[in-house]
Image (cartoon, helix red, strand yellow):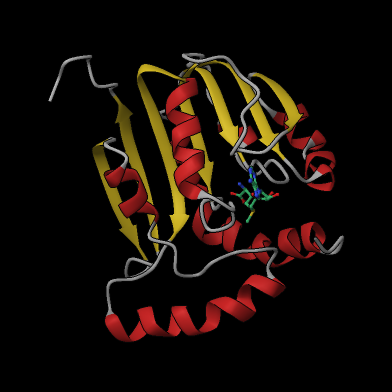
Length: 204
Ligand SMILES: C[S@@+](CC[C@H](N)C(=O)[O-])C[C@H]1O[C@@H](n2cnc3c(N)ncnc32)[C@H](O)[C@@H]1O
């Protein structure tokens, strides 16, 4: 992983964050409550958005540089926040720990989205909310093909980011109950609010 990526990411995202994403993030994160796990927290852009309905945030990221860049955001947070170096495919938490799990612009990059969803389900309490803000594969066939074509080079430049992940499809397939899905910029970005309700034993 290039050492330059965290710096470049924050630099190029700054105008987008200020003019486009800030409101999307704050509306989504206003739904977070209780014990919150944020996966792939990057340089901590979401951390100042958590409100007092949140008891405690554990923000994990495998990139130490990203975590170091989060320290100021932790200071600006209104709630208790703990940073941890960890991967979402192998979460270092007990089963049934969190009331809310948050992932923003992360499912494009994780190595194994299905494994990450299994881990999210494992550490979520029954009834937990999963809040996502992701860029995804679009439904327009022409632009979807462009995303497919660009992804191999994009991945190399942008730290493993896939332009063409069907993140919503992975979550639906995993049986999570969709409460709200919103599309932005012709469906290139989505927010998802979904509910984790484990299947009861013996249920078909
Ligand atoms: C594009 S950045 C997004 C950062 C931030 N969440 C945001 O909304 O801007 C993707 C982040 O996911 C992290 N990441 C990559 N693979 C991961 C994994 N397997 N588990 C957890 N985080 C991961 C990266 O280190 C990076 O900080």
